[in-house]
Amino acid sequence: MDDKIIKVRGVTVELEGVPVLRDLSLAVARGEVVAVVGPNGSGKSTLLRSLAGLVPVSAGSVEVFGAPPVDGPAFWRRVAWAADEPAWYPGLTTREHLELMRAVHGEPRLEVEAALELFGLSARADAPPLNLSTGQRQRLALAAALIRPSELLLLDEPERGLDAAFRERLGALLAGYAAAGGTVVAATHDAALATGARQVFPGNQLTS
Ligand SMILES: Nc1ncnc2c1ncn2[C@@H]1O[C@H](COP(=O)(O)OP(=O)(O)OP(=O)(O)O)[C@@H](O)[C@H]1O
Image 1 (cartoon, rainbow, N blue to C red):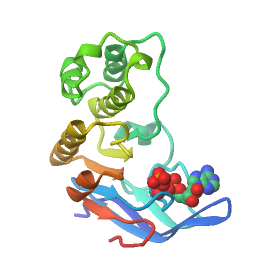
Image 2 (image 1 turned 30 degrees about the horizontal axis):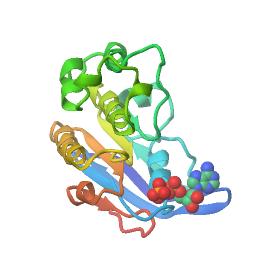
Image 3 (image 1 turned 120 degrees about the vertical axis):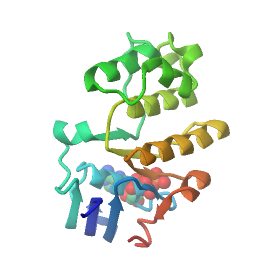
Image 4 (image 1 turned 45 degrees about the horizontal axis):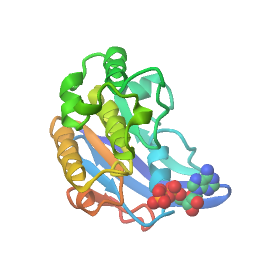
């Protein structure tokens, strides 16, 4: 059985006429944690966006779950995404944001109170997200991505704003997600997160 849920073959992506990814190939199996690494501007976010069907490829092909990714509800029901800070609902508390995710997605991976505890947000559960610290807001964004069911987690610099202790916990959370059959692709500058994962360098084509 072919267990590759991501297949990128000879992909070139041009932005404003400039090739950002060149002839990139990558295959990712179910249950893998892949760290997309490299310097600023090397195409990490662009690779993630191409996996989500958010940027067109000018050559080659991308398949996720056996078909080209399409930025639509069927795709996003299977894929959780955490990249730039999301827009928060000003009238809802931190807890209510997680309750919303739980209500709309069904079959949550975590109960809301357990997620608040796991992400270190219990003490601030009644505060609106805009009254949280930067790192607390990033924890909430990650909690929102991880509370809902998904098969693939696409993360762009999930370590952004997190303290050292929580970065370590994040590594364990992602490993747990993969051990339960999920697949993670995370662009990261965090050495520890990358060390625990299979590393892919979009700028150097050192992929498999
Ligand atoms: N919308 C855009 N239009 C044109 N060029 C872009 C656009 N977005 C990104 N780029 C350029 O594409 C290249 C790759 O950007 P990308 O964001 O993928 O890099 P990155 O590896 O994720 O960087 P960082 O580590 O800084 O997040 C950069 O040179 C960037 O300036």
